[in-house]
Image (cartoon, rainbow, N blue to C red; front, side, top):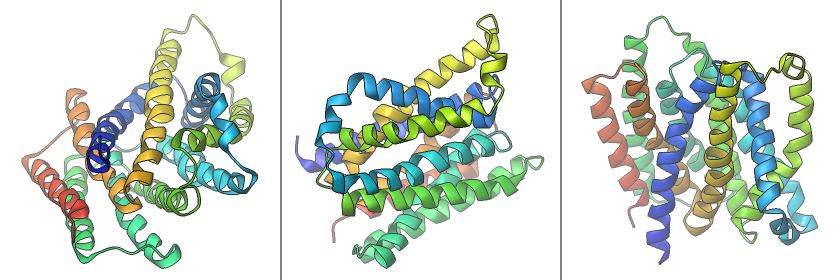
Length: 291
C-alpha cells in the first residue's frame, strides 16, 4: 500500500472512530461527571496501551520525552477535560463541528511557529472548510437556542491544543513510530489522571450494582480503547505519512459522522447543515490537492 492509499485509509478510519466518540462521551456522562470522564478515559487508555504495547517504549530515547510530555498535555490531557465539560452543555454534534477549527490552527501555527510551508490551494481548502463549519454552527445555534454556547470556548482552546500536538509530532517526533508516541503519552498521563480521579467522589461512591454507572464505564471502555488508544496511534501515523494540515482536516469529516449519531439519538439536523457538510468535504479535497 503506497503513502497515498495509507493516508486515505487512516483518514477514513479516524473519521468514523472519532466521529462516534462524541455520542459515546454523551452517553458516558449519564453516569459520571465531566472530570471523572476525562480522568477515567486516560486511565483506561493507559492500562490498555501498557498491557499490549509496553515494548514500544524501548524505542523512545531521552531526547524524545520532553516532546512526549508536551504532546500528552496539549493533545490529550487538557482537551480530554475541556471536551467533557463542553458536551454537558452543547449537543455532541455541535461539539464535533466546533472541533473543526483544528486544521485552521494547525496551518497558522505550523507556518508561524514551526516553519512548515503550505500551498495556496490548501489555504483555500481550510477557508472553505471553515465556511462549512460556520454554517453548521450558526444553524445548530438556531435549532438549539437553549444551549449555552459560551462552552464553545472550551472546544476552541482544545482545538488549539490539537493543532500544537500535530505540529510537534511532525517536527520533533517524526523519527519515532506512532505506537511509541501514544504509549509514551499515556505512560506519563496515568499517575496525573489517577490523582485527578481521587479528588472526585468516584472511589467513595463506586457501586457495582449501579447500572447507570456500569453502563457509563462500558461506553468509556470503548471510547478509551478504540476512540483514544487505537485512534491516536492511527492519527500519529497519519501525521507522519502526510502532513499536519491534511491530518488535522479529519476534524472536518468528524462532524458528519457525529451528526449522524446525534440524529439517531434525537438531536436536530437541517437541510442547511447537510449543505454545510458538502462544503466541508470540498474543503478537505482541496487541502489534499496537489500544487
